[in-house]
Image (cartoon, rainbow, N blue to C red; front, side, top):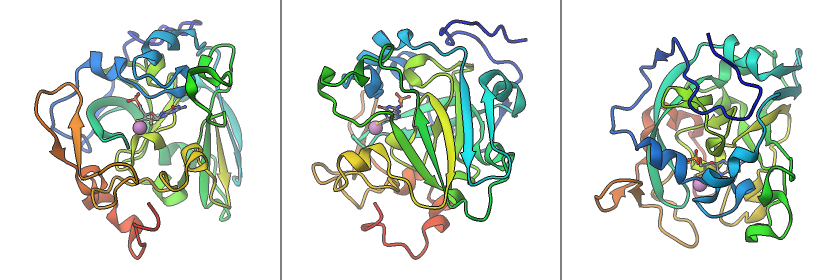
Amino acid sequence: MLALSTQSADAAVKFENIAKSSLSTNEEQTDYDDVTTYNNFYEFGTDKRSPAKLAHRMTTRPWTVEVSGECEKPKTWNIEDILTGFQLEERIYRHRCVEAWSMVIPWVGFSLGDFLKVHQPTSKAKYIEMRTLYRPEEMEGQKSGLFGSSLNWPYREGLRIDEAMHPLAIFAVGLYGEHMPNQNGAPIRLVVPWKYGFKGIKSIVSVQFMEEQPLNTWQEQASREYGFYANVNPYVDHPRWSQASERRVGTLFGREPTLMFNGYEEQVASLYSGMDLTVHF
Ligand SMILES: Nc1nc2c(c(=O)[nH]1)N[C@H]1C(S)=C(S)[C@@H](COP(=O)(O)O)O[C@H]1N2
Ligand SMILES: [Mo]
C-alpha cells in the first residue's frame, strides 16, 4: 500500500494499480526533468525555474478539498480518501501553454465527472469554480510586490459544468506513475487537455458548484488576452503573439503546428457548437 507521508514530499512515492486509458496519446513523452523543472506556478515566482526550487516549502499534508455550492451532498475530503476513493488511471495528454510551448505528460488521475457526481449537483449548478491554496508564508509569490506578479490570490479557475463532466477532464494526483511533485500542483490539480495550460489550476483546496459563470484569475488580470474558455485555437491569436504554432519543450525540432482544441477536436468540438470562438476565446 501507499506510504502516505505527513510531510510535503509527495514526489517519488509510486502509485500501484494504475489503469491504462484508451484516451492517452501515443506521442513521445516529455522527459521527467523537463516536466518538473519548467513550470508555471506563480505562487512560487514568474520564472519557469522557480517552482522547482521553491515549491518544496508548500506543506501538502494534511490537505483537504472542500466541495460546496449548488449540490445536495457538500463534503470536505481528506486527500487520502480521494486517492483511495477513485479509479486512478494513467492519462498521457498533450499539454499546451498559452505561451505557445507544449509537452506530452503522463498524468495519474481520475475522472473529474465521477468526482463531481458524488456530490449530486442541483439543476442550478451550471459552472464550477476551483481555488488554489492561499498560504503566503509558504508561497513567496503570494506576498505582494515579490517576483513582479500582481495576481489577485488565491488563483481561481472555472469550467462550464458540461466541460467539467467531459470524459477527458481529470483531477491529476501524479505524473510518471508517482505522486504529484509540488511544482506541478501537489497534491491535486486540474487537467483539461483541450484548453490552454492556465486552466489547469494547481494545488486545489476547494470546488464550488455555481449558477453564474465565475471569473478566473487570468481573465481578471487581462480580459482582453485571456478568456473564460481558453480552448486551444490556432486560428485565434493572443493579442501579443500567434497561436498557430508551438515549441515542444525538450525537443530539437523547430516549431510544429498547433492543432484545434490541442488535437482533441473530435472529442470536444460539440461542446461549443454554435458558439463564436473568436468572441468566446
Ligand atoms: N495555482 C496555479 N495554478 C496554475 C498556474 C499558476 O500560476 N498557479 N499556472 C498555470 C499555467 S499558465 C500552466 S501552463 C500550467 C503549468 O503546469 P505544469 O507546470 O505542470 O506544466 O499550470 C497552470 N496552473
Ligand atoms: Mo500557461
